[in-house]
Image 1 (cartoon, rainbow, N blue to C red):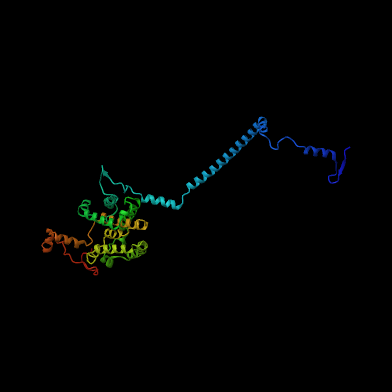
Image 2 (image 1 turned 180 degrees about the horizontal axis):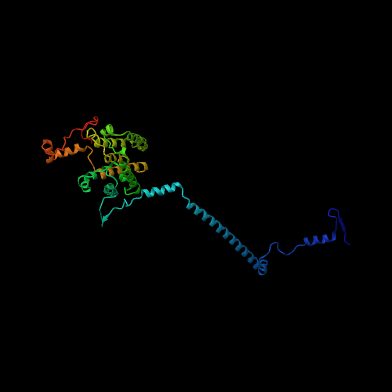
Length: 379
């Protein structure tokens, strides 16, 4: 007879004989392995393996589709971000683009023309020099042709043929000196937009002078001492800070790069060769072609935009002076008189002997810039 006990914790009756039988069944050893054998797995494959494979494959497909969708979303987000990044251009990138446009030359500097295996010119140095000379003459011819339609403040007797015949060799000499002292072989060729625009700006400013009355005066001792109006003096004073700043930038740059003494010696040598022999003469006249040529070649730092701008602007002054008035000598009539006497021109004999019948011919009296009432020639 089975013994039945009462469990006070669970408040249930427990059949002890039944529990004993269950314990005996658990304690009896079995021949079944703890882990499934290969045959068992094979049997499982026969009946349920196919379902498992289908389930796994469906899961993998769904997972790959989800991953693909996620990748597509990520790619779309990345593409949008890349498009936004590409469309955004910082101020520095715009500055670089503008600088590339301004510095790009019309013709290459480093492609040397040749006929077969023979070079036509030596190299980039010669190419840049030739481009500088040709561009300068092209500007002189262009400005000379345009100015008569703008103003009568010009040399009406000057003809283009006369300029090329009598002054062409001197102009070429000026340009060669400007090129060498200005170290223009270190720059890009002058056929670039930056150089041309500053030259045009200089010409535009000079052609406004005939419409501004107080600017219609030259830079000479007599004019400054006796003729200049107060408005012109005020205008000249307002230019002092600008010119001083450009000079200071050049001095600072030369000092920082250890070439200040070189630049000072260059400037002093140019003053010794091109200014000192002429300045003491009472006929000395500072033509603006001369001022632009003398100062512009010393603004020769190719990696500083303000130096390149100063050089190109001064070059524009030189071009305008020659195109509008010709390359007049700095010593004006004294130079002409010297040439006439030295060459023994017949007309000068009549003048010296006072045998001319032309009453309009006047004796050449040395000008005195300190005497504002003197009725003599003033350069």
